[in-house]
Image (tube, rainbow over all chains, first blue to last red; front, side):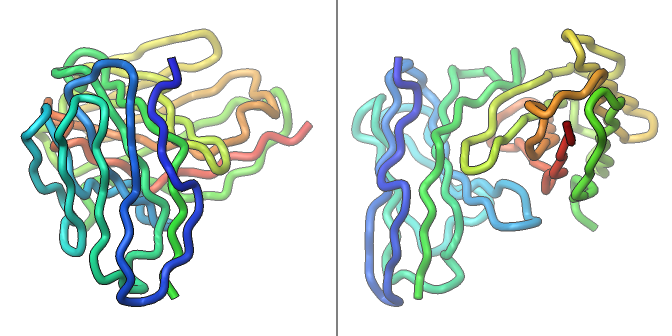
Length: 116
Length: 111
């Protein structure tokens, strides 16, 4: 199993450009998440999904959109990129109820985005 | 006040030392407590998980939760250079939607 795979690993965007961060998992997990990690700030939840066709906002959703058409894929769309979106983005997945059972989220290796 | 407070370090110790990492929190609804380890330029991975108060031991690692003081700790015995990483505490009241991470403590174990 590859686990959670994110692409691209690095990207530089100009202000106002748009892009999609791709995330796919091969563990048949229902739950998928997008976090951003800024220095000294911990991980902040952007969006999450409990299954195909169901998504919901997290703590910091502004400027982002998601879709979940399949169990495996959970892309994150950035529209009109701004310098404040410079960050490291992590996609994660988990079986349902895992926080209450094992606390385990499975993370990808991250996508480093710089907006200039 | 942040919901979860964690000393960012950096913390540097010699090989073989006992390391103590700590987090405090303010939300009394938190019941599930986790420690994640994150190597440089990698995603976090679960290291320890504890439900409610008490201790849990796994090899050289011990996780401790004191809900009355809203304080959790991770102890690393006989620390190794391979333990050099950022350690993130995380806690939840039961759903991943409510999972809250600390800012992480950067640890370096010197050979």
